[in-house]
Amino acid sequence: MTAAEPQSPVLLFDEDGRMHVIHDVAVVAEMIEDATDFYEGFDGLARPVRPNGSPGSVKFVLVSEQPKEATVRHRVQRYYTRYASRHPTRIPPSASDMASFMLAVANDEVIE
Image (cartoon, rainbow, N blue to C red; front, side, top):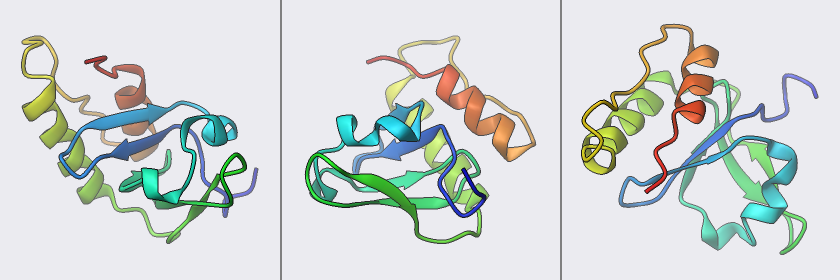
């Protein structure tokens, strides 16, 4: 895997702010059937990704190599505020390093 390829884990966000985690980019075809099932996603380095390919062979491609750290942190905060609030001990991870933050969020996924 090169730096120009999406890195695991991938955080996906629906239009309403719900978050889903794909822990391994290699299994994206099993999780996303086609591009219409997708709203917004970020790889393990906070770079925006989008699905590409035909149904059954979808993979992620980078939209930009520039991380969107502030956007990702905002989306995660929104998710925890709206959807994880019934879990009073759940607060977003606070790692300052973005790769560590993404991994901590993926490992702390709240199953609704």
